[in-house]
Amino acid sequence: MTDVATAENISRSYWPKGWAARVLTGLSGILAVIVALKAAAYEPSGDVLFANQDHIFRILAFIALTVWTTFAIGVRRRGAAAMITLGFAIFVDMILVPLKHEGMSTITSANLGIVIAYCSMHLYWLGLVQKRIAK
Image (cartoon, rainbow, N blue to C red; front, side, top):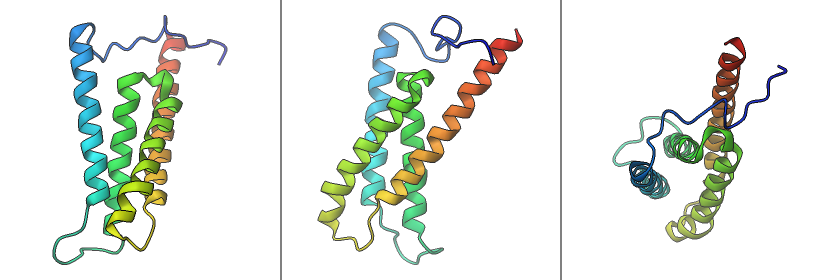
C-alpha cells in the first residue's frame, strides 16, 4: 500500500454539505446520546430471554453510537470518534449506572461495543483506500 489516503482523495460524499450537514450532525448527535442513555437505563421487562441480555443490548447500543459518531466527524477520524464515545461511556458508567445500583459494571459492555465498531470502521476505511488504489 504505497498510496496515502488524504482528505483530497477520499471525501465524505455520503454526508450532506452546508446547512443540512449542521442540522443532520446535530440530530445524529442527539439520537446517539438518547440511544446511549437508553442503553444505560435498560432493564429487561418481564422474563429475560437469554443470559446477559442487558449487556448484549449495551454492546449493540455502543456499536451504533460509535458508528454514528464516526460518520458524523468523518471516517478518517475514527479513533477520535471511538475516544468521544468512550468518554461518554465512562460518564454514563461513573454517574448514571451507580444511581441504578447495578451489581455488575457496564463499562466492559460499552468498551466491547466501541472496539467492535472501531475495528469495523477501520476495515471500512481500508476498503476505501483499496478502491482508491485500484483506480
